[in-house]
Length: 322
Image (cartoon, rainbow, N blue to C red; front, side):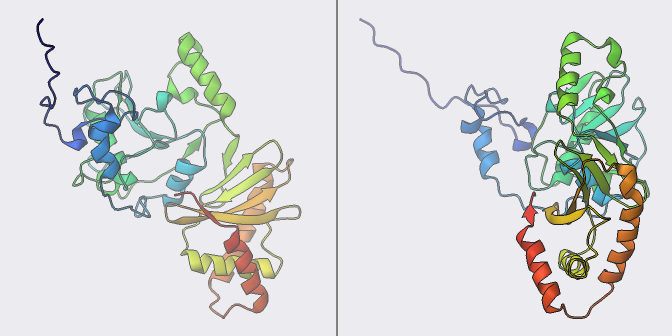
């Protein structure tokens, strides 16, 4: 009887750099073609790669507060992105989108335009570098194809290197995700079902026009105002504590400053609003609060005992998202 031939171990697998291997689910086959699961192949190196965490990945970009808001707070929004070197031939436009179908990192549409997804998991500690890498690959992709995730090269450019430093960042908040497809009314059954699910999960959100990076949102129990602020955290907490101790931290009667959270190096105060208070109702009170806050930020006197207690309360209710 012939002996059973032992399985050959240690097959030579393609010599790929981590940056060339797409990021997939841990239990899926590794894209390198080794036949092993991703977590036991290139995913192992990716999981243990030491990447310095960039605390403020959007620092230096126009509209840093809005970048943070669209990454963490806003369900459906788009922003036209001006490129430093202009649009390549065959690319009519480049836009940032909060989310794309199937959680694609980016999409080169049939007409050649590019949509770059913001609310995706990234493979390194620098969201800006990962997004710049995805954007560059999208610009070179064939029209009509999505771009898959991967670990960006450590020496690759960041958004700050790719986007026009003189450009503006003006988010357009949408009620739903119809911007995914040019003609949503004639979309396929699968796409229509995906749109319906996404739209049903989207929280109504409006960007205030009178102050920067402030977003009203509606929830079943109460509404909220979430305001991304660029000020140094310690200085901002002192200023909010002064206003809170003085009884002027609310926006208007019936509203309440309930705390704050950190996101990508910035602080985001949050107010509870009555359920019937819409975005238009909070525009003027928010502008008036901005004036009170500016005065409090300009004060450098030591905090009083009441202000210290107010600051302690704000700090205890602070959480970190990223």
